[in-house]
Image (tube, rainbow, N blue to C red; front, side, top):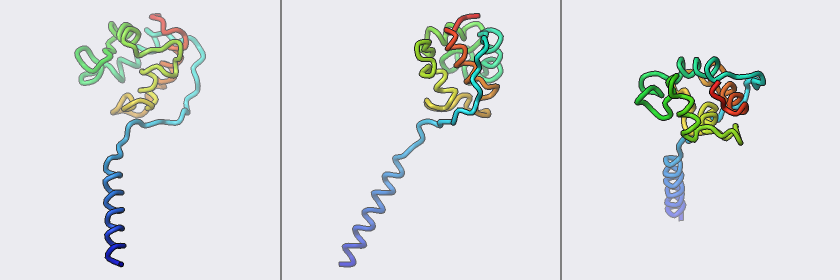
Amino acid sequence: MSINKITIAIAVFAAAMIGLQSCYKVATVLPKTDVEITGPVSFANDIIPILDSKCNMSGCHSAGGVKPTLTSDKAFNSLTNGGYIDVASPENSAVYLWLTGKKATIMPPTGPANPSNISQYMLAWIKQNAQNN
């Protein structure tokens, strides 16, 4: 009878190990700790400088890089026409979900989470109808 118990224990252990091997990280969700930005947000003056310093670089969202292209001259059209912005439901915009770690890899992947409070600037800009201002 002890051999049966050992066999069952080994089978349960093996099943647990196989189950643990199939687990993987899908998204990192960070608690909202930033203060909401309620003042006017300018795409040219607030969003573009952050994109240029944190996103628009070789190997990331520069011309010919990962979509969307976030170079100063293409960022607005790339975000708004590419389906990354949802003005009807700003918190569900793909770009906001990436910036907050609720979708795939948090952006930017190599720097500190949420540099320059970009997620809150992006959310405020989207809530303000994502204008090219």
